[in-house]
Amino acid sequence: MLEDGEASDALIELAQHSAPPVLLGDPSFDNEARYRGESEWKVTLTELGRSLVAREDDMWHHNTIKRWWGGTELTNERLWRWDAETRSLIAP
Image (tube, rainbow, N blue to C red; front, side, top):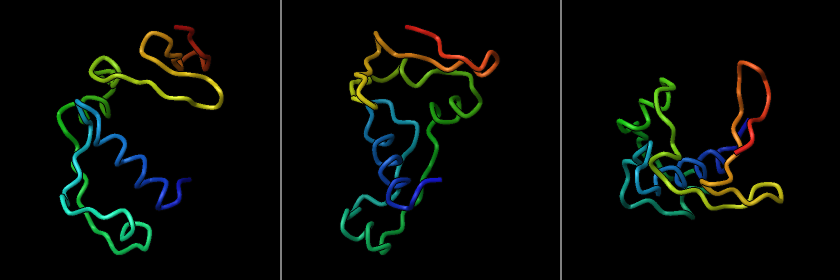
């Protein structure tokens, strides 16, 4: 389960992509107010977000990923996938 701050951070990161799956409704968003629980904003799914929820699209076909996760650098070219059917990782 995510803490409020972690969930907010994840939503903010999603909203900052060039093709965001979510939009955050408060343009006057303040980081400090968020951590004090004083910020309220509406989260809206974009068309991409709706297609991701329906499992009809892939976030990384529309956006670039370049980040470190647990000592592994993730890029679009080296992105591992999870196969829910076989419950296994699929190499890039």
